[in-house]
Image 1 (tube, rainbow, N blue to C red):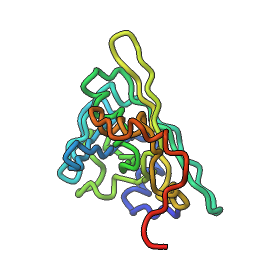
Image 2: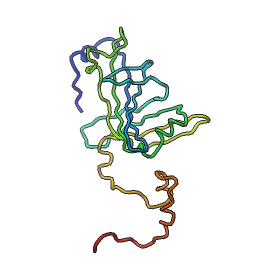
Image 3: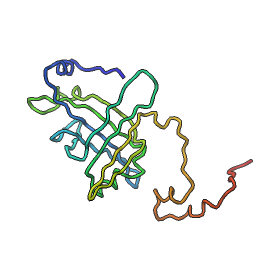
Image 4: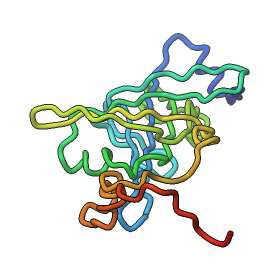
Length: 196
């Protein structure tokens, strides 16, 4: 993807020193299906951009860089979020996070004011990656947990067939008290649906 920097940003990048921060947006979905966007930064202080506050906190640890090329491929990055308490693991470490959107930006800051570069701030932000959560891994610590997301580009599910496994364990991930799939393993013949 070609990067078209503004004149302000080109002048800043050509300078002697750069002050940058990563801005991370992660969508979450609640049990009612409402999508909420959470805003984080790896900066030492909060950053305000486009009416949103990107929170500076220790939970957002790191992400791997994506490599761009002219070939058609599925680009992916890994995002590590650490030192999460139980309530945050229930938000970020659930299967409903799969296919939720993630956006990663690099922000350029004015070293004199610590504000976003430029008058409007729009020329101080460069999108590094946009994709969806393809998978996650949780590592439990003594009183906290770490989550690592694998985030893939928009074409990650291009060939995926929709559906789910018809077994009790898979069904109870979404509906823990529902036992309607308890005897699903006993049906050995293929079931035909609809007209012949």
